[in-house]
Length: 425
Image 1: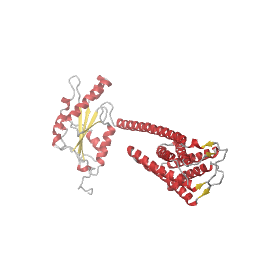
Image 2 (image 1 turned 60 degrees about the horizontal axis):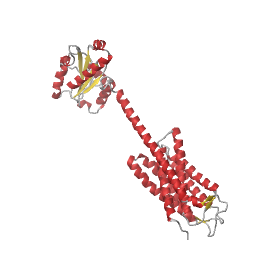
Image 3 (image 1 turned 90 degrees about the horizontal axis):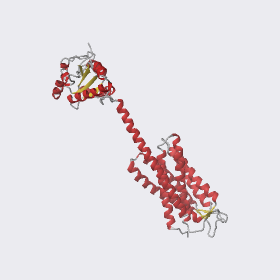
Image 4 (image 1 turned 30 degrees about the vertical axis):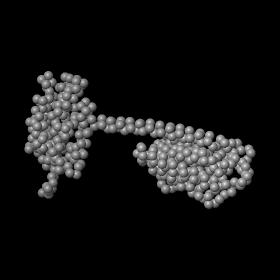
């Protein structure tokens, strides 16, 4: 009856857990990179994952209570089989989209590499008597290798979409299960291929068995730990770069819709706001007024003050207009000299005081040393127009300041069909 060293059995499982965790980690990382950046991760992932599975196999073999030495060439070939199969599997599974055929190919490639690595590794002992195979255990070991590979690759893709803290827990839990499957394949494979009692390894084998136990396990644990650390550091760096880029994109997008001098929404932002408001299904149920304010003597002021001083004056004017208009009113700078206000539900009595103060704009904004002369206009949706172009054009028709907020003289758009009206006749 075969006996096993429990410490080496445990060590083989620990190595398998780390190998499975590394495989899941690198599988997710490879899926997030494109182009030439994939190759270093594929090579590193294949080396780490393949070496981990290969190490588990030899540590598990060394747990068996028998004298062992190994042929160096066959042992290296078994390692290459595990590394190559792991790399190809990671390459396939790391694709953005993968069908059933590719998934099956990746599974067979990875499981095939594990099976070849296992049985070739056992042959590497070059025993004095040929091995004896048990067909049932052979089939079971291959089935476990296929199932473990499919689970590893499937979970690797699945957990990519999980949020930060959950993905770590899911990855570790999956690694525990996958490691059990890998060990299951190994130890059933040991039952499937046995050597007659008294068989001895070849005398000219180049690798001593005592190096294939705890020393190899420690080396592999260190290798896998370093690999995961490097990958985690890179992921953190990439995450920081992605967040910085997202913040920069938001800033650039905001700047595209902001006026640099005043900090107000600019012409593009106003037009977008009007389009969004008009596009609402219930827009007719929410009328609004568009009030136009223009500094009539802007050229004179800017000529006398200069650009920097004029920008400071514009900021003061902006603060003054904002002070006159309550927060729900949307204020935008439309051009160098003009502003627009969007007043939702313009007939609300709460706006009466604002209209009164806007009609006194000449007295409220400016000083004797810096007089500001204003022109004004206004339009109303849906009465004046049903498009942003018509509303803006109608609002820019000059009126006296004392007409601001007096909407009884606003003319209807003859091309506009209001609800309940007929186009016939």
